[in-house]
Image 1 (cartoon, rainbow, N blue to C red):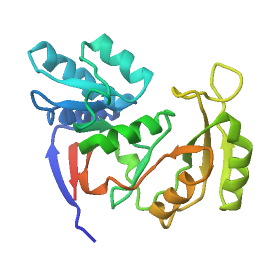
Image 2: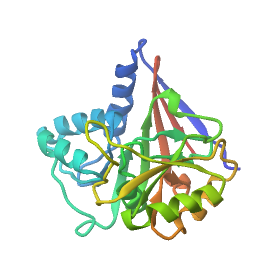
Image 3: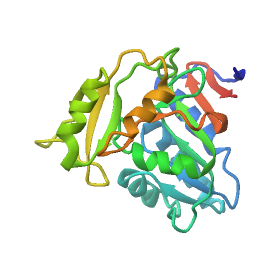
Image 4: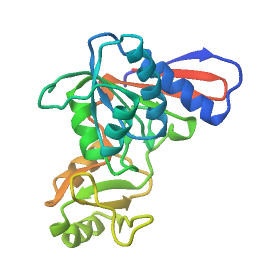
Amino acid sequence: MDSMRDNRIIMDELGPDMAKQAAGIHAAGMVRDGMAIGLGTGSTVLFAMQQLSLKVKEGLDITGVPTSFQAAIRARELGIPLTTLDDHPVLDLAIDGADQVDPLFRVIKGRGAAHVREKCVAAAAGRFIIVADPGKIVPVLDAAVPLEVLPFAVTPVLTSLRNLGGDPVLREGQKKDGPVITDNGNMIIDCGFGPIDQPGQLEISLTTIPGVLSCGLFCGFTQKTTVIVGDMTGVRILTR
């Protein structure tokens, strides 16, 4: 097993939001002039985007690929130039959040229902930068795994997930009636499995179910992942 390095940048004691902000700011500091980067979705990534916005106003030349409508709207409001994977199929790095990260840097994502685009962007990136708070770092992945599913196939996918031992639930919208609809026009199923002993094998099993576009397990990017954790004393940088 590859060892994990834990470098700490000590600051004065930080509150929870300031700790997330510190992680986001540190991630933004990894972006260099001329880079094409992936822009993730979520509150911690927003801090990175706000810092990048300041750097762009100071002359930093970058372009970003957003992973959701939300990320695109935020980037435009912040003045960050945008591009697509059609124009930049290879990215220098991607900055994104996570629902859970285990000691081998396997990740569960998808609370924001953007994990299919996030996985495409992570695959295109030379480095995958995860920004997180300490509660996201866990010894074993055990959160519900989101799956983006074609509406046509929701019922058979639910059956397949139960046959795999899962406890699937169709995600319902908030402030609207009915299911969550993704940016790609599909539905989200959240499936609990309890502690996941073999995340990589489960990812393969889930993504080969007909009708599933992709699942929220990210197990193929561990060698290029850096995790930046903001906590009450500063920032921890976890690398392989």
